[in-house]
Length: 232
Ligand SMILES: Nc1ncnc2c1ncn2[C@@H]1O[C@H](COP(=O)(O)OP(=O)(O)OP(=O)(O)O)[C@@H](O)[C@H]1O
Ligand SMILES: [Mg+2]
Image 1 (cartoon, helix red, strand yellow):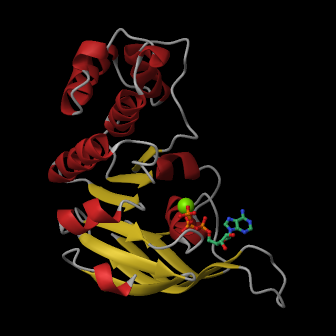
Image 2 (image 1 turned 60 degrees about the vertical axis):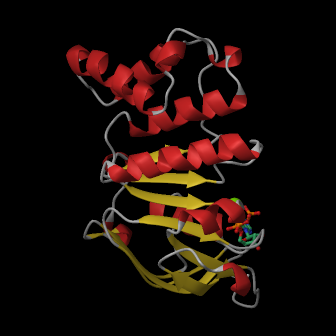
């Protein structure tokens, strides 16, 4: 479903510079997989996710998602491409002057969903992350962990194929971080492909998912059942 072929991203477009985000990444991710990207700060995890989302374009190499070569994707098709994804990012936060329900309603209205679907989908998505009771609360009335769960509900509300999260558990205590990771597992069980960049290596090791370790922009290891600890 996601295929990267010899992908390089050089941020500074100067041939003499060695500022690579990622170098020569070849990677296949099948539909329905759960993949963790780990590695030190600056390794290239966010760069890789941004390339897949087409937030940025590679300097060289090819990326194909759902048989769609991203280099052939025009500006007009881009919004439709992005509807394949549920993106969980603190940079795209909740609107503070709208309730949890209204925040979710808004993203459904933008994609032109009928009212009946909206009314059915919102309690369902909030139920999945255990936030139904907070439907009428405002974001500032929620804890950070609760806000994050609402972001998860928002990411899945339009039924994306792929869910992407960059450091979802940063700033959360260990127990809440586990809670969040288990919710990603539930989302994965719904058949969605899940891609997570994280530093929460204890949780990653315990979850026994596919773990791709990035070092200096390259894939250092790619293991299917999480027991990667020693190579870091
Ligand atoms: N917009 C940018 N302009 C220039 N260089 C960048 C830019 N974004 C990232 N880089 C560089 O690319 C490399 C990879 O960065 P990236 O953000 O992908 O790392 P990361 O693995 O996500 O790190 P972290 O764990 O700290 O989030 C780093 O050397 C970084 O300095
Ligand atoms: Mg990052």
